[in-house]
Length: 466
Ligand code: AMP
Image (cartoon, rainbow, N blue to C red; front, top):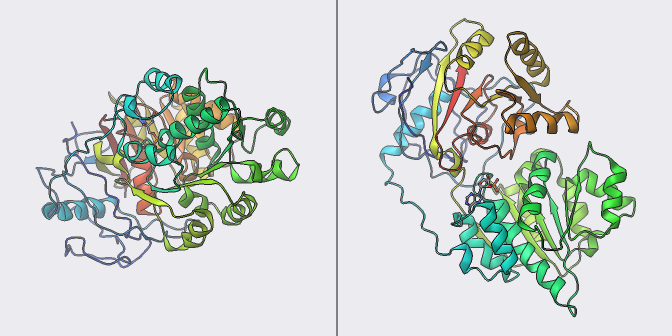
């Protein structure tokens, strides 16, 4: 059995991975280093003093898992970080260092106090049909970001939301925006509200649109989903019907706008979601293009897991006197037990297969570094009789959607993914995240492991290390 430990949300985003200052020893300090500290390769097995709570190196599983007990939070970094280069670099990320660092930082940290929501959904000044839809959606208590942001958006304030996937941010902006638009529909004297939501990935846009349909059910409100890889004509015809919400990815939205199917100047409210990811994916010029065409008078909402300095221009040109709401980053990973699996010269695929055959590995998200590597892994697993699908940049939109659906509905045991393809995915009950290849950066690691341990369930993240 794995020893049970909980690694709190280590969102020490000031840490950079990518340094190659190998440290052989174990000298550490309590995480008080400045923003450029790299987690460097330490080599060898995890030293005993870094593990707390009896987490010796148990190799009880087929995979040879090192159980490392940790608690508390590795927190305290600023918001500013820079990503290590992604492409084709050898990862210098070693989770055993993360484990050690988290344990040491935790010693100096006070115990976490659970957030107590000030509002209930019934208390918000939102219309009855929307309240009904929230109840049907099964939400009872607002998450911290929802608690703090919904009233501000209802009042029409511009907001910078520093929050990542898993915090409930989608509902945090959808609920008040749906209400605001609904009010303009009821009031014949008011100009009809229209909302644009721009997200970095197709999957995230699909998820936002799915959420929209649930929250706006039976309210006479419609959306158009505008994403790449999907049929342009059907998107153009849904735009011609004058939807209240347009939800899409930058490239396709701009393409459709240039074809004259809608004007960016026609929106009353705009959401830029996961802006740090949009930067990473090279959408900076697309964002600037859109912002320039938006009407001067508008309601602007900006969401990003981090606020690096490079975003300042965009923030200033997009928002007017915004209220900044920052919720605990990566809260989703609070419930994730993180362990390492020492490969020690064995075949990684054999180790993976051994794990997948074990009880409890029911819904497993496996991360790999390259599209080619994932294709090969997928093929190998299929040959071994594992039900598996893969999502990465070379898959068509319909293939990606099919794979996700199969995984969500438990038709397959394993979903293979690259970092980009997996950002923002909201999948219930993922039992394990396996880092078949280590991520490039600490942020990627946190994003990956945040796919499990959601909605107060406990998840397990395993990282393969040599
Ligand atoms: P998000 O950060 O928007 O991707 O949401 C993460 C997950 O939390 C999704 O599965 C949501 O359906 C769920 N969620 C969001 N808000 C609530 C809430 N108030 N109560 C329960 N679940 C929620």
